[in-house]
Image 1 (cartoon, helix red, strand yellow):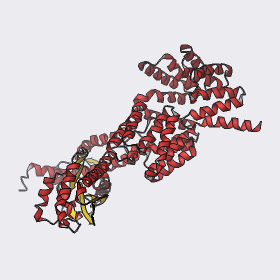
Image 2: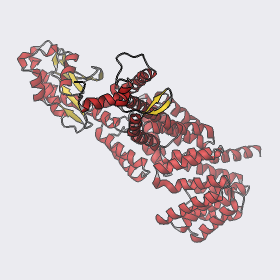
Image 3: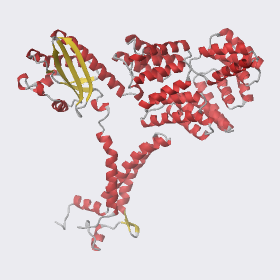
Image 4: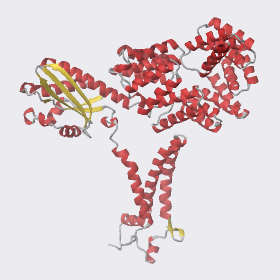
Length: 632
């Protein structure tokens, strides 16, 4: 009925005539490409995470506006013109849709956009290579256990085909990380015992059955016999790909050992899958932690969380509990070595590093590299430390921890550009995996930028660090103030100093501590007169604080301002804490400035042994004295 078209049909024709449908398709495809490109490119340009969110919101807001404009206006050879109503167009002989038309540029553009969208969307839709595909929506690994195939040649073992299946299902069901299809369900889907020959269950058939039950992992097993010895083999298959991703073999003596065999097999499978499940949900660098105890691994993860928050007391306690469960848990020993090092307990740091080294032949190659790494750290061998971490990065280039470690060693040895390269790669990975890098990555990279005169980059990075670590704002404000003073921007430096003071008062810091921060900032910026003023004010407020006395003594001695007064102060400190490596270094430096080379050398060597990690200034000072003594 051409004279009386229904309203919906008329509206649809009008949408096509005004090219609204075509505009919607082009806008949607273009928007998708822009979002995907932004998600890939923008993080690598160092832009903040909210940039991508802003683009998405901008494109969503722009969608209805674009539709409205496409309804009202049209692009013609004469330019942009307002679209005429349908009746006017019909009077001029225009039709809603021509019967035949030539290929237009817009058709080519839409086709290209569709191809690009398909290329970008394909990996997201069909990416099955990750272990996460083995998990249910609730995060648990779903499992179907098939009856065991009797390959012994002895029909008496047919009973154990379902018997072993039932025992394994019951045992695996005790795990909170696993979702196991129960025996009754498996029995029903396979049919009665007499209806099926279990030897005919191929991997393909088992996978099909598992997929029907929406299980992503299928377990198939066989029984073998040689003499009185019985061997049970088990394969864990991905039901979607039929790929075997884990196999086990356990031997026993006839049927009497089947319960023990099943318990052992269940423990192996549970441990493997539980740890796999835990590792898949957390940071990439934890995937190679080596333990056979799920409980020990969970304690390790809890310790790792405390460690990442710099709660060393909590981390040490949990790591040590993990080792009590698994006395060969070298990954926890490695973490303990670093924890104790970070709190300046060098002997305990060495103890755990050496404990791990004693077990190096029992662990895979990647963990062997990490053991050698921590031993190089506690033995203060920076070249060896970098070597081990770089070897690890060859087999795991996505290790943010190792990239940070490489950057830290380069920074500590004043190799600024190498440090920048390593830290930048660390941050690139953190953005790629939607993680936030450790606070010290931002501080040390910013400081390396300062050392190379890239102050704008440093300030930008410090702001990013504050955004991600708001609780650590004073530490970053400290280096922002230094950066501002390096650029002779006193006004901006005063803003950061004010923020430090305000935050310190909120946190209840003593006034002397705030002044000490001020002094350190001006010292770093080489404004020694102002720094001395703040050091003296801090000391006047707390004359018995060993940290303040040491800081003031080091400032006076290292800058040759008042070596005599500095030595008086540090002597008082050493009387109170004679075994502190940091304070002994200041004491040894004071002896060196007095010309007491041999005494200085002995003290600096003792201080070196008490320090947990390599310190470049300390190392160079010892070398200077050794070279001088060699010429006498």
